[in-house]
Length: 329
Length: 287
Image 1 (cartoon, rainbow over the protein chains, first blue to last red):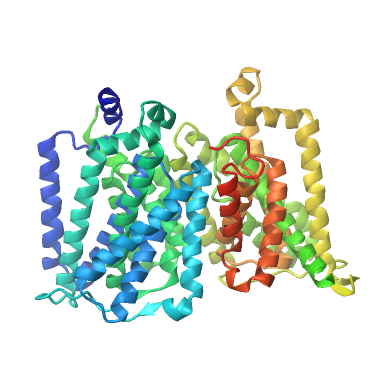
Image 2 (tube, rainbow over the protein chains, first blue to last red):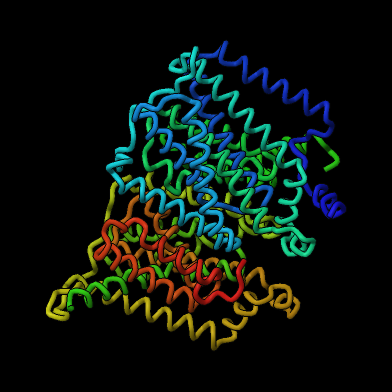
């Protein structure tokens, strides 16, 4: 099994021009310093936007584990995100506000949703898989929509209080930003370790040639289910934070447009790089926030931007940058 | 009893409308391996163009004849200018690109025609109702059923019995071999793509008097069409036809018999079909 793993590992796409390890570490430290320091000098509004970007960056990275590494294009990733958001919203509005309870509850519920969906949807492949994930997410949407007694129906759940952590006031902008930053950075680091592990290499092997991986003795179905659950748990973390960030959860978080939006973020940034989808999430949200304050035609501009990126940057926004940094590729 | 028969006819009319959309989307996928997410956009564009043309010329029939040509020209441009460079790249690029085009079409429509729901009156002669099973039934819906059935028959004959159809089927089966036989597969791609978007435009015109049109109807329709195509099996005409009927009837009867499940009934049908047959009803291979 060893040589097989090494072959598969060489197929792992290299990230945004991070050629050497030290350069990579330096880059990460710079990014951490910027994300940690920016809110201290910028306005409250920007900090709020930055919080949202972090949450969606994690959401997009979690989907990238499926789309970019395992080759599983899901159009139902909102399921884990939304289920976790609802579970946290339900607990919080019923008096359970301790983060020590709500966070694990959110994560577990999102991962459980992913497990159920994954076991069924992963029996199919390609477009059929994509449509099955869509179907299951839409069923979750319908439940949130119809089960008014619990979920509040179309009105959703409003007035979700910020989580309670002893000694910290998360009601204000800055402490909440740092909570989101720490959790998202931790999850991103974990995802990074996962895609660089033998497990991550095996996933890439499944993407490139599933039959061969099976012939090599890998239980590919199980590999895919595990990846699906990990991605679901990471999406659940972002869903948990989103419920707190927004203070409000409506069936929209489960609707297919949410799944579509996060898929677009992944593709725009560059699938299979983790950094790319995070950049894609930032680009989409910044465009939405910036352009929509100048013109009503932001959907048009966003659409044109997608087209231009596909034509000009074959591997997404990150490919554009990487090509400039590493002339050899 | 007659009530259910009429509902079955309603489901049939909806199914035939879906068939106009699904046939094109499925052919494009089967031949070119492209999931055209802008397909719903061409449908919406067709309905809006019909709206404007009817206001301008006063004739539904002119719109019915002209609009499909216009959307086919749009599809031709899209394939020729934007999709061609992408065939050697991954599906992911095609998804992002056609999604971008769909966004552009939706916002352009909102810009030009406004955000309200609009609809067309049924054309003179078809705007009546006839007595069927003791109840009044709109003639226009019978027209939709007849049109869908006629188109299905024509496509079946063209694809199955003519040289042109044989070329397309050969392309679906094996692109390289078809090319090696001296057929310009690129031209076949472009023509099938334009034909598919033309059909989507036709569906838009036909749907305008029944369903109405608004920005956002494009994505709603796209999702239902994708469901139809997947249920029937990608790339098969037969699959598109029976898938359309199944989803049309399931949606109509689901809303009557199980109103609390109205939102998900077609998803439930799709999930059931795919769990039993992962390649759809008539799909040979899964991809």
